[in-house]
Amino acid sequence: MRKKTAYRKFGHTGTLDPFASGLVILCLNKATKLSSFIINSNKDYLVKIELGKKTDTGDRDGNIILQEEPSLPSKDIVDKAINQIRNLRTQVPPSYSAKKINGKAAYKYARKGIQLNLQPQKITIHSFDIISFTDNIIVYRTKVSKGTYIRTLSETFAEYLGNIAYTKDLRRFSIGNISVKDAVKPSSLNADNWQKYLKPINSLKWDYPIIHLKKREICRFMVGNTVKLSESFYDDHRNEYLANHCELKENQVIVFAAEAYNEIIENDCLGIAHIDKNNLYPKKVL
Image (cartoon, rainbow, N blue to C red; front, top):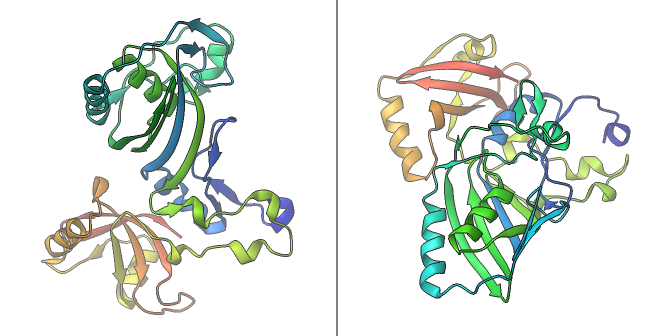
């Protein structure tokens, strides 16, 4: 992308496993400061698993380490397993993952045969639904929080069904409110057309609360100073966010300009802030 655009500053919002397909968001220039914020968004996947086989990596690229005749679970067992998955609160990352251990990705240890004692991580399964179940192939759709490993989720679901499994196919449909439908294949981009597909920050649909600041507040925010909001601002807007199904995650909000100020145009994204009652503390200023 650097060769095609002549820009040097890029950032992505989460990689995909080599066997997977779907959405990867690239951030350009000042938008790279928002990449970590986007990474924290929920992700939506379509997953195909095969029962009766287990691989060392949990996906089709790994070596088969266990194979057995899959058992056909009853509807009650399937329903119970789905409910168990939806109520998962922690998950141990797989050994073959990019999870950093002492500054090094876990898969680098795994490739050398080094056993790691990975700790459970907090996760949330927002939705989990079976699309099809034919013979030993299950296709499911799930929306999960940051840090959820789908390969491990597939193995856990199979375990609840009384089986073993590996992830055969995986496609990421969305990150937050950004959909793969709005994406373009890298092979379709070139030096002449890439700007056609570039989306300005203010055109994105955020699943985080948004705050708009006026000139005087913009001036303070852009130099990193605390912005004082009205006494009722926090409570009024918190109810508004909840009504619109926005999560006030760690009291973080995205800040936009309500009006033009110097080189800033109306509805420009100014950055990320932490809100505490009627105080707005800049975290990242674009």
